[in-house]
View: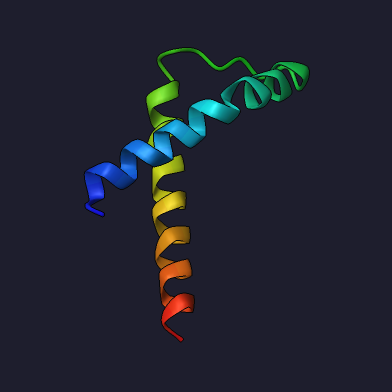
Length: 61
């Protein structure tokens, strides 16, 4: 699977859980504006990519 397809899958996962994450942030009094969203999504993609690579390495062992 190429990087672009993985990123699209990661984004689909993020959007699946976004309402729950937004509700938790709202409960904590943290406002998540649409301007901030790309920064969080970029961070999420980096975390997911690293987790994916870690899982891939574990599968090789």
